[in-house]
Length: 540
Image (tube, rainbow, N blue to C red; front, side, top):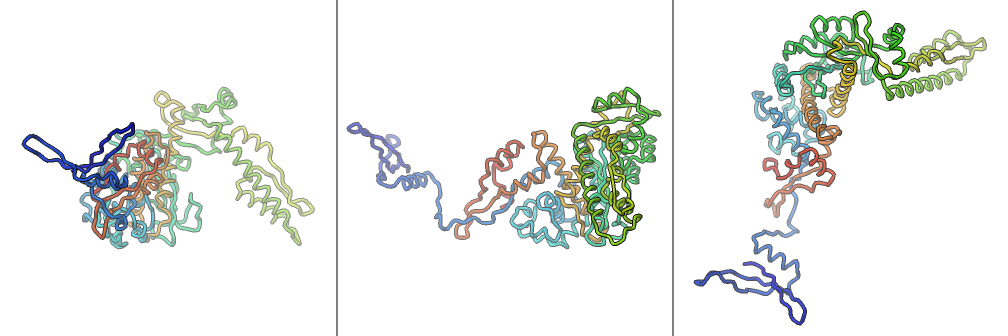
């Protein structure tokens, strides 16, 4: 049966008639007959009859409900990347399938909702995390089970890291960016690992560990080391060199690292190992070398040439800079001087019954040292007991001429690596700094709550695996001209939800929420629309 609409014209007026008709066969061929005229029914009722006769099913709106709606969008992207990068094969052989699923859940969770192990079950509630990781929808994410799964990494990390290297760098690497950062503990931390030391996260009241990471020029990490918190950067480079040779078979590579590791013993070790390096030297070293700069190079600096090179005692140096750094250095100096003057005025205005000239001068000196403005001021206490100060204008003028410049040192031969390429290598070190920013902020490595050294290391390793995925995705998305941070994008995509429709406790179908235009455009730009073309049968 079907609904047929017919037109007829009488007296110049057109009439529409809606008939329910039935087809049947006769000896003379197929025929049809009218069963009912439904023209007088309301249009929505006629459409309902027509759709029903075409085989569509209809349910009462009052009994329809959305059941088991789950955040899914970001997980869909991560699940596809997990398969494409072969991470199931990486974890194969570790523990039971459920334990491997828990490891996967902890890694994906670092990107979507980083939290302590105790809070994972709460954060995963209302998401498709368990199903995406091959776990039961009723997975409890019990913290003891999570710790047991994490312990499976003990004794396996060297093999896993080597597999990750082969996966991400099939042709090897020729340029390595290396940097250090600190991560603090809440509480005492494990013995023989947590120490007080110089920190980059401004928590002098907390013991810490050091993270040493090496990446390629795109920021994809190949090695992460957890070190005692009281080590200095110049004590780590030689150990890294040995690890790279032993673990990855890297024999020739150019290291790029910051000034904290440019100790002479490190540079000599790299040279003896026939390794090339690019590093930044201190401003004090630059000031000393500038006094011996040849006249032609002095002219280049005066003209604000962005890259100036010279060779001294068979050592190659490159001075680089630019308008942005020049403006930044000027603003930083101005801010320090203004802050120091405010502090000095406040110190001078303190009411004292009796002035101790030596003590007041000492207080002023310590104040300027703390504000990093000591070199810009002279100060003394006059016979009346008043603190007096003035700017060292010659020092300020000389530093103004140097604004924006920094000194690089390299043993790369000039024919193979021009001065512009030396600068480009060092600028790539910002990728490592961004890696630390993402590793510690987006993935929330810090603060660390674990008390066992192996679990501290395994916690950082899980974050490393999450960042490894993030860096790989970020490289692919940059090719699509998407500059946004991967974790932010994934968390936006999590607003795409899937659910199950049911009537009277009977499932009748699955449903995905409507994707907003801005997210749809983003998915199209990143080539991810295909992931949302159909509903995943394994999740619901």
